Image 1: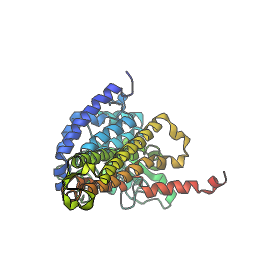
Image 2: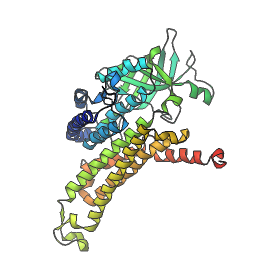
Image 3: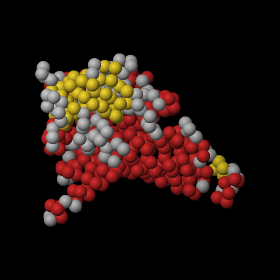
Image 4: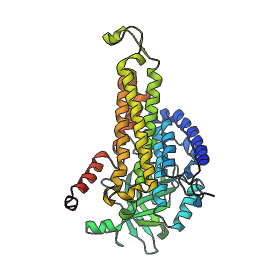
Length: 411
C-alpha cells in the first residue's frame, strides 16, 4: 500500500469536504450573528474522517500531502471561512507536530488524531507568537515534567479540542526566566498534552475565558486560554521551539493562504450570482439606460473579470508553492529566507481577498453594506488575513534584512 494519498482517495476526501462545506455555509451566518463557535460541527467533522487528512498513513491517517490538504481547506473555506479557520488550526498543528515529534510520540498523538481527536495550538501572547519570545513559563517539577503558567490570547478551536500543543519557556525550579535573550531562545520549548475542560471551560490547571469579540471571523471561537499550573509530563516535551518550528511553519502559512483562497472562490461566486441578475433603473444616470442589466455595464464586466483573474492567480501561487515544497525546490533558498518566501503565498492571497471583498461591495451596491449581508460578512472576515503569520510587513522586513546584510553585499 502506498504511503501517499492516491487520486481516488483524494477525490473521496474532497467529496466529504464538499458535503461538510455545504453544512458550514448553512449554519455560518447564525454563528456570525451570535459570535459563537459552531459546536454542531464537531461531530460532523469527526464523522467525516477529515481530521485524519494529513496524518501519515503509517499512523492511521489519510496521508494527504500539503497540496492535497490545501485543496481540501480551500473547499471547506468556500462554504464558510470562519468555521474552516477554526479547524484549519487542527491541520496546521498536525502538520507542524508530525515533523517535530519522535516516532513514539507520532504513534501516540497522531494515532489519536486518526481515531478522531482534535488538536489545537495556542501560541500568541501579549508580545509572543511565531516570531516573538514567549512569556509563558514551564516550571520543572520534582517528580518530572513541567507545570505551565501564563495565558494565550488566540485559542482558536479550543472549544472542540482534545489535545493541546503550545510553546513556553522553561524556567529554573523557582519559576525564574533565563536572564539573557540567547538563553531564553534556547529554553523556549514546544509541548503536547491532553486537553480537557468541562462545559464551563474549566480543567485541571487550565481554563477557557470567553473573550472573543473581533471585527470578523466570529465563528472561530478564538478564546483566551489560561494555564494555571497545567501539568505536562516528561514525554510531552517535543523540541526546542525556535530551531524546530521555523523548519515546518509552511503548514501555518500555506494553510492560512488556503483559507483566503477559498474565500476568494466564495466572493466571486456570490458576486456573479447577484450581478448576473441585477438590473438598474434610470436613476443610474448617464451610465445606464432604464432597466439595464448590470452584467452589460462596462465597469461591472471589468470588475468580475478582475476578481476572476485574482482568484486564478492566487490559486496558482498557493498550489505552486505547495508543489515546490513537495519537490524540494525550497532547498534552493537561503535558510533565513525559507519561511518568508513561503509566506509570500499567504501575503498574496490576503491582499487579493481584501481587494475582492471591497470591490464586490462596490459593484453590488448599498445592499451589501447591510448587517448580515454575505458581502458585509466576507469583507469583515477577510480583514483577518492581515494578521496571520507572516503578515506583509514581517515578510518584507525578513527579506530586506537578509538581502541587505553585509555578507550578501560582498558576494
